[in-house]
Picture (cartoon, rainbow, N blue to C red):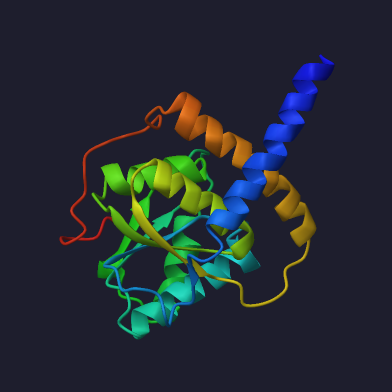
Length: 206
């Protein structure tokens, strides 16, 4: 047992150091990021129709890039797993108020974790060249997953302020890196839900 936990702890340290250092230079702002047609906005919680500050900032960055013609299509990943849990409508209203055309917004309805969201962006929306929007604490893990899925991804920081409980998020992220390793290297399985493919050059599924 002691040997097992010693090995686990050493691997935990090595993996986090590897991910944090390797992807440090692949971070952009919405102004200097290489232009790609598809941008993926990763989900953050919504409660009682109220978007979290973190989610709002991700959507704001997407809208700013849209206005600068850095982006043509936006995919929003969100959780539709619970009955009467509506994240779609408040996100739609928020983006419409920021002058993003509904025709350029697409939805991934089965966000359960970052791995599945990126896998589905490639499989369903056929997007292999993606700019991903999230906060810095989350971004390195997603870039690691992109590499393991053979996706060409760049990352746009959505940090617009100091967030409460950030130490908690960073601590949780260090263990989420272990899950990412498991999903990509050990498990390497397709997501639970994979339905028909969507052509993002045609009508939005929003």
